[in-house]
Amino acid sequence: MNRFSIVLLALLSSLPPTLIKAASKMNVVFFLVDDFGYHDISATGSPLYETPRIDELAESGVLLTQAHSAYPRCVPSRFAMISGVHPSRAASVGESPGNMSPDRVTIAEALKEQGYATFFAGKWHLGKEAARHPQGQGFDINIAGGSAGAPGSYFPPYDNSKKLTGPETLQAPEGEYLTDRLTTETVQFIEAKREDPFFVYLSHYAVHTPIQGKANKTARYEKKIHSIDYEGSEYNIGADGRELRHQNNPRYAAMVESVDESLGRILDTLKRLKIDDKTIVILTSDHGGLSNSGPESKRELATSNLPLRAGKGHIYQGGLRVPVIVHWPGVTKSGSRTDFPITGMDYYPTILEMLELPLRPDDHIDGVSFVPGLKGKQNFNSKRAFFWYSDAGRRDSTGDLNAAAIRRGPYKLLQFFNEDRLELYNLKTDPGETQNLVLRKAELRDSLLAELLDWKQAMKVRDKEQ
Image 1 (cartoon, rainbow, N blue to C red):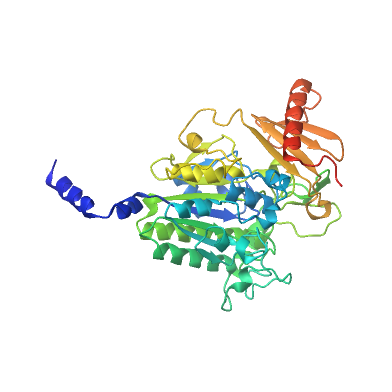
Image 2: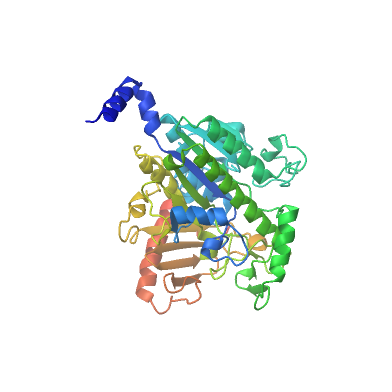
């Protein structure tokens, strides 16, 4: 043993055991973007949006190309991420995902028990009173998180007319932009807790409506859009309602760029504080981009998810498939892509396993850690069944129909139960869900349908709109 090793050993032995343990723990930054489609970043093929810092994260980590939300809308999908529980399971015991029970043990509570400083900023949307807001669900600090699903504006004042709690609680100077403010609060927390293990849950309101970007960025994207030769009509009108075919909204593009800058500021802070090598960063979305509305609706649409079918509200891939990037220092291979499937409940157990903490299967009952897949296990999750159920039926809002779905391997069966219609797709050969195989693969159809019906019965979900 050399002299340096002897001195280091003596120094470590003089430190309190709790300090040594804290110093060895990895930090976690969970970066959640609202209504952010799989193709809303340049790394996945966007011809318009500029996301250099998100691309940088992908280049230093791994891009999951088959990641899915637990539900194609905000509240249930967010419930699944924070609780590890399928929203249909919660509903089966009378719990509303939008008013999550204080008895749920969230990922924040699990980490707080292990000595982590916990921080939340942004959109919560999972409770109607303070006890069900982030500070009542395991977060030491809550910035602008409450019952609101969107701000009244991304510029001060942030108040919305529904009198919900959220960003209006911030004291905002004139000219501030909400995405920037949430980032500043997050950076300040990281700076204050640099010596402690921390869990940051930055849940941006962006890029949810209202679609409001900074004026200078919007003007630049207006010029860029004029330089792009879009082919065909602007909209498809069909079975999925009115669908935007082009990424051609300059204000939305500006919002995406501001989110990208937010991630960049977080990454720069970690590097400046020399804790980037001990901080796991996970970027994800709650569901697909807002690309569809009812056929007669005049609502402004944000983006296009093509070649994926449909978008927010739909159980097609455009509504469920989300971008996920994981940077796990020393583990994930830089610039890699993986195609094993995951869903929204899986983040909870995955984060625990990444941090070498005990899993809590009674809490994250529907989640499966995807650490084995991140470490290169072949065919990970290839035989696992994934289930979705939506009885929202808000046709005018997003043009979707009530439906349930099961995916096993590359095959996905959709049941539109009010229309008594089945659709079957091979997502490997047909990611756009254009070739219905329901008549050609009758045996597979019947097998998947039986499994889906059994799941629906176990979850006590209804078969018909009531």
